[in-house]
Length: 199
Image (cartoon, rainbow, N blue to C red):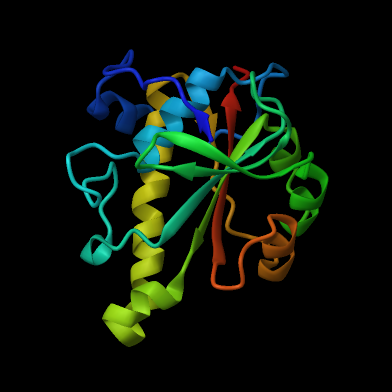
C-alpha cells in the first residue's frame, strides 16, 4: 500500500469559480505530475470526507459506492508507471500492476491522443452486480449516475488545482477492460486523462 499526501483543505479558487472556469482540456504539459496533485484529485473525486464509510466526496445510490477508481500512471512523481487502485478509506494506492499501458489504452480509446499524452488518467469501473443486488434492473442507470458524480468532482478538482482533464467515453469496452486487467465483475465506464495544461 502506498500512502498518499494529505489533500489541501483549500485551493486557489472556490467551487463557484471552478464551475465557471471548467473546460475540457486536451493538451498537457510535458512534465511529470506531482504525486501531491494526483493525490488531491483522487481524494476530491472519491475520498472519505466523513466518519462513515459512505461519507465520500461524491454521492452514490444507497451509499454502495460500487465504482472503483484507478490511477493510470505514466509520469507521476514517486510512482512507477502502472495501474493503481485508489483506496478511499485509507487515502492510499494499491498497485494493480506495473507497466506503461498508455499505448494500449490509447488504442482502446479509438486512438485519442490525449490518452497517450497525459501523464496520468483516472479510470472508472463499476461492479454492476453489487448495485443490482439492491436495485435490480436500475443498476446500470445508478452506476452511470454514480460515475457522473465522481467524474464531475474530478473535473472541478482539476480546475481548482490548475490541472486539466477531458472525459473519454468513446472506447471499446473489452479492450479497456483487458488493458486495465479489470476483474470479471467490473465494467469500464469512463477514462479521464489529466495533468498540467499548456496554455
